[in-house]
Amino acid sequence: MKTQKSIFLVLLLALIGTSNLVYAANQNSFYGVWISKNGGLFYEINKDAIVINRIDYSNRYSISKNKYRIVKWEKDKANADKYVIYTLDESDNKKSFEVSIDAYSDLFVFAPPMTLGMEMKKSSAAELNKTLKTAEDFEKAAEEAQKRTEEAKKVVDVVALDLDENNAPRSKAEIMAVVNARITGLRNVYKKYLKLKPGFGGKVTLKFTIAPGGDIVSINIVSSTTDYDEFDNAVKNMVATWKWKIIGSGNTTPTISFNFAE
Image 1: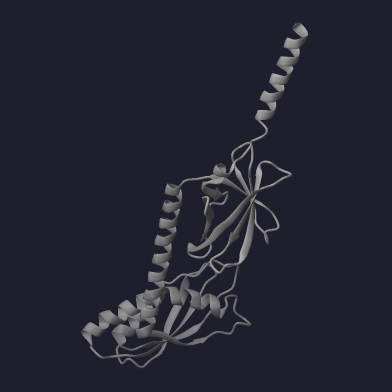
Image 2: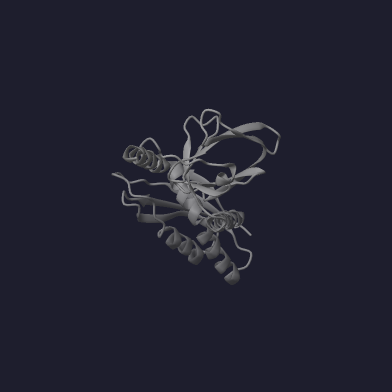
């Protein structure tokens, strides 16, 4: 009798121990919203479809969405906790996903041409919608900023940039990155002075020196065709406030011509 009890206890303890290591997933276990570790990828899974939402934080929070219609769920014969999901994308191209859930209730996804699988945690529709809303707001703000820059270029345009790149620590591309980002300020200056002198315009050429710390340490008006000294000085004073990134050493002295026209 004691022997039978001992055997029963051993078997019971063995079952309890293994139950902490094995999670027998069924198809319903995969349903819901899952999020990648870096927060940039969401999987929405239900019996009919897999929807993948990607948020690219390095590119102005750009959003992409791919939907895959599920054709078949197939349980892996070698692993009771793994399923192969056969799908078709929106162009009816075939794609399969291998999915499993570990003892910590995390989702593991492998989808060729991925070379490595990906671990994801359970999320919620509320978290997904909040993340998408934030990304959409950033994307909209970036688009509006780009639109303002394009509008500014309609009245203010850089018609020439002179820089000896062989002897300058900063490139023309670096110079223009800041110019394009700040050109809206020059548009506002131009619009202000148009109210005082309607119809005027012309080209203002500035030469300035950017120190390693990013500040403009000297700036001069080389020439102007506006016939409006007060405006020319306002343009010079606006550009004098611009800043570039800090570099190790060396001054950079570009000459830039801005054209102003209604």
